[in-house]
Length: 197
Image (tube, rainbow, N blue to C red; front, top):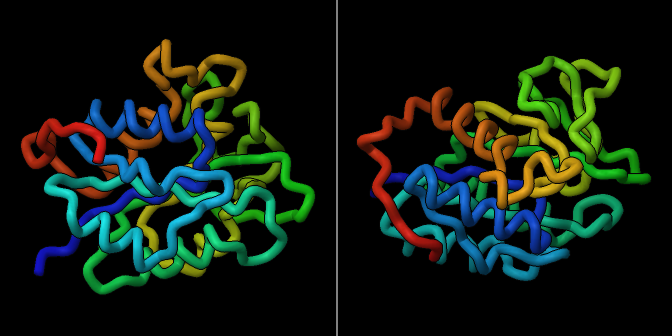
């Protein structure tokens, strides 16, 4: 059976959901809207079932631990999905947060609030930080344990001082998605227009 291509998003609040839903439609993919939640509600098994039902990919799936210390429900579901034999994770969007638990992950590249690629991490507002290749956030620490081809760090999805607001087309999130698709080799003619699942 052909593997379903998935993009992981480490945020699941209302802003993230509406933004990811919008960007998924823009690139001809599918957003699993039921994966939204702060924290995540569905289990990894339930998410895989929904992913396999979608007729188009890439499939966007959101995971959120809502600041839980250590491995919360969001990360447990994320690990299950990412390691499933019928799933191919083509990339992850690691979303920065003001976490006080010092959870972080390595990133391959970040996109700041002005849309510039940077080797440095970014904070929740999308402002460049001092650490190279590292981002602090919630639901992120398990990402580097998984075999993910590219991890892109960005600020808070749909926000960043209105720079990523949906009324402007969420340009920062869209750029992160386009970068993942470009690196994964997913061609435009391989993506079909679809609605939210």
